[in-house]
Image 1 (cartoon, rainbow, N blue to C red):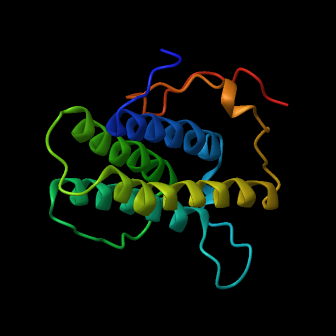
Image 2 (image 1 turned 30 degrees about the horizontal axis):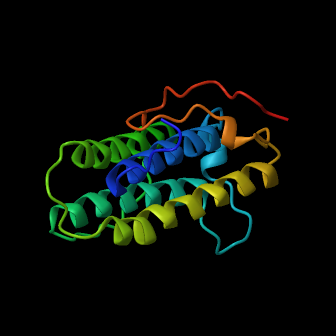
Length: 161
């Protein structure tokens, strides 16, 4: 409801839904060939970036549970990596929605893994344009983003340009 102040956890869950919406748009329609696109010899490929994003949300969940674990995953085939992106988001979101206590603050979860993931989604968008398969710009303030909607089935864009 407009005018109400959400709890920190509600705001973080909305942020995860935003990550799913924007990240889903960044990977939707990208071919397996895009996964291996390299803009420079030492640059990460989109597959490497997406694997890292999955690792970030697995790490976020481990932080929330109080058992910080980091895994540096090798990329899966593109469609599997896209599915992993959504499944790691879903697992983290479900934990937040469960009401179980958080072992660290919402602020730490946001400033670490969540903010890093948003940066990497921007990189995927830039790589799409560099690879010649750009996504359409959008007024994201008008997008239908709903806490808990973190899977691949996102609302259609309301205002692309």
